[in-house]
Length: 466
Image (cartoon, rainbow, N blue to C red):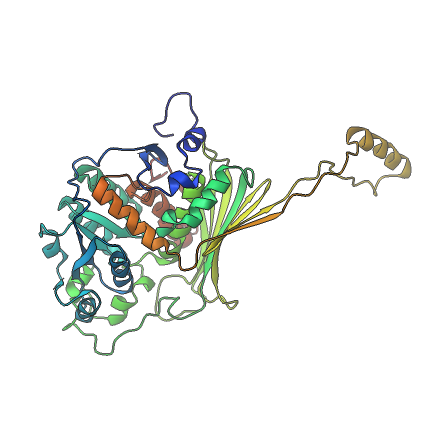
């Protein structure tokens, strides 16, 4: 169950390290991985890593410069001491946009390998399509670059082990781009949960519904898009040759050859946040259903997905059940929440807040005796009053507590900050390859369960199907 000191439970060890408190969670230099989701303090520099001077500017290259890539690039430039110096994309117009955003002097290319050969580039941000993640991440790590890899870290769960192997072999910081694990909101949720504010959890539900065309991945397609300004053959990678189709390029999330559907795009965020809060390795049984209910535009990715996940009892948490849902035609307007239910209350986590609602089980269980005859009712009342005597009333404590993030807070900003700290100082990262695969694996296997119409069994410690 992880490498923690003899005689100390994993849950107690996590608490001793301060994982339950904002002091450690809020300080990226303090917490680093021992094994699984267990952490130690003050880990030395990553093996084999050449650490840039704290006073030097980190030179960052973008691999994949679409909406997510450019957004990540903007997040990089929010940090002093970090600069976008190069960008790779297969669409010429996106490269031109990078010059507009990041300066006329940046290097532009369609071939990411050109950037990996440059000694002056310290790190890369990979925001390409899911089917390119594994190869580009491994190539970048092997080239000595620190890597920010967008979620899901891979397209198939088995690919994740190869990325983790490269992460270990080359000793460069790898962070997966699921920003909730760097959020002060989730740090507060972890603190509250580990302090027992809602008791022992038994059920968790999460959803991320949408009600817009862009939210349902109907991204804009330029009328001028053509094989002349898009490197179509490279985009296909090792997929069978297909005629140029701009919809497959610009709306790739809709197609299972290139993307990972709702689970890979959205469920993975919900898994990441939950695993951070609870210290969990993940579920052991995965069951899913759903279908294409509204966006029948040629896609093969479902627009409604519902997943159920059984989490086993561990040193960190009791057994519980998780339900996740995404509906891309949610007429109520959409939204996202995680709601954790315990035997002493519930915790709701939204975009910028954590709300704890408390409840107490009555000390007297009550009577259900009206179906008994009068003599038996009298008998039971006497028994009940003897066994459960009335006590003096107690004061009622506050039932709801709300914690809010500051106006304009960005967890993506913090996520990049943690990564930069790992690059400069060799400090450990929470959302590394192992954590990323433990969130990514169950998400990807949700697709398998949905399409095979059967339960899938997952070993959350070994990160393999069983």
